[in-house]
Length: 167
Image 1 (cartoon, helix red, strand yellow):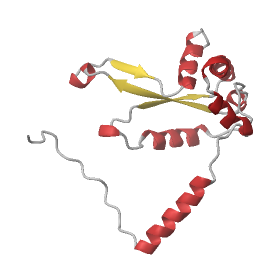
Image 2 (cartoon, rainbow, N blue to C red):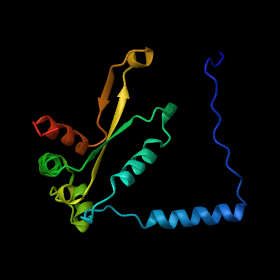
Image 3 (spheres, one colour):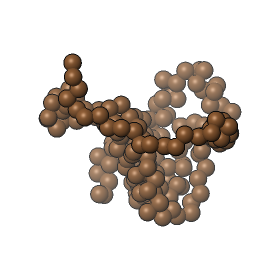
Image 4 (tube, rainbow, N blue to C red):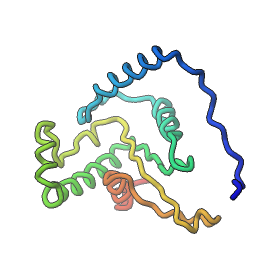
């Protein structure tokens, strides 16, 4: 079976000296080990140009068949952030009340994380990430994407916007 599509070569990158490669990997691992889930955000404004560049970079992350099946929604409007928080808290309250396992609640307890999401209003910018999967038909030339949300927050964002918030 022959490939009907031309292959796209990966960009050329210079080969690193093995010691340099190990040092870079070690530094990267140290940086990654310092990451934490963040619930406290600065209220300082963020230049929207910087947000655009960050989203542009995130949108190019490698994916299966290089389809990048995600979409980003940048929310800065205070009313939309309020509605997003309201929807997210409603969903999270239900999750903690009936769907979260005891093991999950115990893991979250030291972090002080619960259904309350004030940071959704406090942060100057909220970026919701949605994953878009195309149906079998769309790969045959049709354009009807089948959407599946990557997070409950994405669902809440759309639900809040559908509740009649100003566009």
